[in-house]
Image 1 (tube, rainbow, N blue to C red):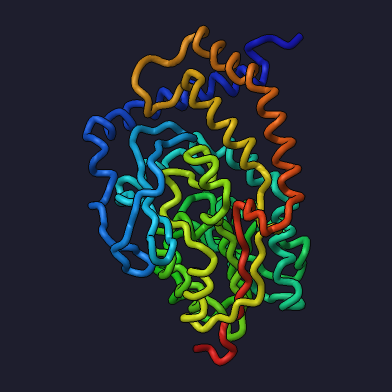
Image 2 (image 1 turned 45 degrees about the vertical axis):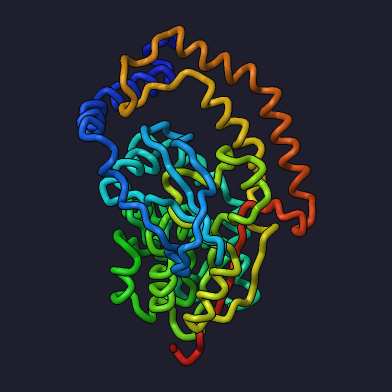
Length: 368
């Protein structure tokens, strides 16, 4: 007979409660020192082009984890680059990434990333017209290596390595998803990887970087002459970015630090000696904008879940029931949003509703 004590969901809830309780003292000690140290001084020029013509594009909070703090995105009036200003400092990056991809967030996001096989195949196949079978491939920002695991089905003879700042890359190597896993900043590791790879990929990685231009230079260094660079990033020129405001998921504050329009990336790649072979918008689109916006809105209205960075006692039975009731009442809204997302996907690219874009570029064959 199954009892509550042996029910898997009950056991997981109990484990989560213990995990949160164990983490709470460290989080509360961090917050007691104030959040000002989590930010660098505000800058008065664009980190992409140097222009001083800036305006505030968005003010928001952490809508996913609900960690304390408010965040500002500025837009450059000359080149269109959008960036977090003031930007997270080193301690801020550590605080806001802690338990996002790893720790408390590992199981939740691991399931999300592990169930995107169709998107991973599409990404891998985007280089097929330009290379028969790459010998070596480096996936930067690989996380737990799920893309490489799927891409191996498309290119079974390719050796896939991965690079990431988190411990996920080490787990990916142990689980056999990667041939080799490198942990650390790409610009720092690039010299030891110079001229090694036929393909370097960066999927939704550059927007997390404090210096995207340095990341692109590192990719150029890691590639062999004539190698391919494959990039996919959120598109800040997507109409949803303005229509949905702070509820547009790709703003993803405070993790997303830089969002570059496609023209900016193309220009920078040209400066580095790349030739852009392909620019895709529809193929890179993830049809979840309306669904995600509705979910974020409902989550903001519902009582908070138990997390170690929020003050006060853990939520009791009533608060948990109210949270469930909010989402239950929102089911019709979520279903309608999901349906509309599917219909929007059928609209042509000129509607400018694609929330991401993809570039494939070839490095100069003379190694410059």
